[in-house]
Structure formats: structure tokens, C-alpha cells
Length: 488
Image 1 (cartoon, rainbow, N blue to C red):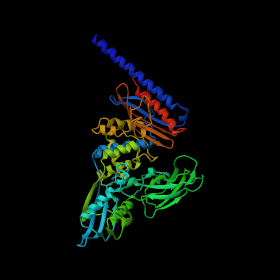
Image 2 (cartoon, rainbow, N blue to C red; image 1 turned 180 degrees about the horizontal axis):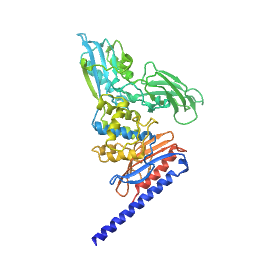
Image 3 (cartoon, rainbow, N blue to C red; image 1 turned 90 degrees about the vertical axis):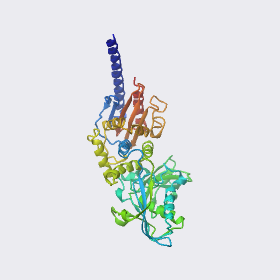
């Protein structure tokens, strides 16, 4: 009798599972057969984390540009290799001698360690974004330095000077989301342009302020006032170039409209900022600010064993940076995390080094066959990842010692981050923990879904070259997530 009951119970659950699987697969077929996806490429995979079995799939091995869901690989790699409490270091040195009059006959050096939190708005209120510089000045003053005969020299050379990863477009690099990685970042590598627009459409909009002040910056302004709503302006400019071009439109009748762009040269900027703080404290700097890139035109390989360490600044905890990265989809942070794993493992903080470490780490742990990742953020359209690659990563992280930290770094549907509007007040509200990805004609999600049956599923969906709006595709994806969330 007990054997019969067990058999019937097993049969019942088996039938329920088959029904659930067929239901999800049917919903998936409805999704891919939508007219807006007639010419689109779709990769989808849904696995049961308990059994690691596939529940539903569609072209799970097809590799596609995934947009910002690529950040899952950067954040997971950094978490696994560096650990949640890792803090990047920026070190302040001096060379030369300090005489009896308080004159440093030498230079102050800022040695970059890839910390993305220096002066970041995500970790500091506006009035405290320069507090780290004030602390550095206080440490310099403790040595009795009243004058510097040389310069403040910023050194980001250990992370290279590529400026931007391979595959980034010209249209992206001058805008706020196109801030490239650096051994020294400051203020999220952003500049803010404040415009005043005309009351008449098609009239020039005037730039009334730029913060922070960037020495030598030339801003070519072609922005017009318009009756269109919102920010429809774009900023063009290559890394390290002080020529910037602003185009597009902004709404009429704006007394102050802020547009964000990428900072041309963060290494030079942070040296300039420290000089300004020193001068405010009546410490003169004869040769002002300089950078290793400009001095040596390559990796300087400065010998710091001959210099005197003044102070070591520790940045925000890695897990806090990762949470901001995944919740707010900050490209710069994802790029810095990738560079940091390379720096930690090899002493080379370039994107190329980070990518090599990432590939070596995961190739021995999960199936990354055919996967191609060329940056840390997903901004590169040369990235190619499959839904199966993502679910393999997610399955691994669900068993990692860092699984709770990783899960908590992800936005929640209907509640937080970039998923705040996804499935809001629907069946999957609060049930999806995932990273989103959006670029022109690309929409993706990857993460975990907690279902009504008590199970947790790993999923990934990538859609390229759809017709219609991104919001319409998002709505259809939400219907699929809702279905998974109520699986019996």
C-alpha cells in the first residue's frame, strides 16, 4: 500500500512537472512567434536549480550581443576572485626632501589602484564628494609641507591607457554611459553641462556652467531648443581628447538643464583637483598638475620603492560597488571591476588582462563554449553570449559561498533598481531577481525566478533586432516571467 501511495505521489508530481513545462514552453512559443520578433534572434533558457534540468528553452546555445546583462559576468568574477570585502587602494607618495622651511623639493604622486568610488555620487552626498581630497591634503600637511617645488603627478599607468574597451562606438564614448575605465577615476568620470534654453524652438541652447572645471576643455555646442520633451542631446568625444561636441535638442524654457558627459582625462583631472585643494590650504605647487601618460606617453613603470608613502586611501567595499553596478547598471563600475580582477591577479589592470582572468576562471568551472566577452559592461556590440552561458553562471553562483551576496546585488521585479517597473503588481512582482540589458534593438534579462511551487529557477533571455519599441518587448517578456512565477 505504501509503495502504491509513493508511486501515485511520484506520478502526480511528474504529471504536474510535465504540465508546467509544457505550459511554459507554450508561452515561450507564443513569445517567439509574435509578429514583432519575425526577423529577430532569440536565445532563452530556463533551468531548475535543484535538478539543473532544462524546463524550457529556445535556441539556448545561440550567442548574441546581450547588452548590460554582461555585467553579471563582471560582478560574479570580481566577487569570486576578490571577495565581498575587497577595497581598492589609492596611494599618495612624495619624492625629494622637505627642508626646514616646509618646502618639498620634489613632487607629490597619486598612484591609482582602480577605485571607482573616489568622489562618486553613489557613495557621497554632493557636499562631500571632495572630502577624500581634503583628507589627502590633511595628511600632506602633517608632514609640515607648506610649499611644493615640483608638481602633483597622477599615475594611472598600471591600468593602461586604452581609454575604452574594444567595440565601443564613437556615439557612446562622449556620453555619460561611455566613461571608460582608468587606474584613477574621480566623480564617476563624469562632467555636467548646464544649459539654458530659449523660449523659441530651434534656437541655440547656451552652456552656462561645466562641472567639474576641466582645464583646456573645448566644448563645441550645437544643441538647440525644442518643443520635444526630455533630453535628446548627445555628446561626442574620444578618450583623452579635450575637444567635445554637443548636439541634439533640449526642451524650451529651461533656465538650467543638466546634461552629463564622460570626463576626457580622469588621470589629469584628479591631479588638478588635488592642486586646487592644496592651494585652498595655502600650499603652493610650483609646477601645478601633471600626469604620467603625458610625461611618459606610455606605461611609466614608476619605481615607488624610492618614494615615501604618505597615505593609503581605501575605497568602498567591493560588494557595495557590485550592488550599485547591478541595481543602477553603471557601466564604469562594471569596467573597473573587470580591470581590478586583472590587476589583483597579474599586476596589469587593463581590460585585456581582466578579460583573460575572467575567461580562465570560468572556463574551468562552467561551459563557456563559443562565448565572447570584450568588455565588462556590455556596451560593446562585439560581445556574444548565449542564454545557456548565463544559466550556467547563475547555477554556479547559486552554490557559491558568495551566493547570498550575489543574489542581494540583483534588482527585484516591481521593487528596485532597473527592475522596478518590471511585472509591477503582477504575478511575478517581487519574484524575479535579475539584471536587465537594453540597447538599440537589444533587450535582455538574466537572473533567478522564485516560483509559487517553492522552487527557484535560473533563466536568461536575449532578443536582438526586434521590430517596435523596447517597452513592448519588455511587456511580452513580463508575461513569460509571470507564467514562470505561478508554476504549480
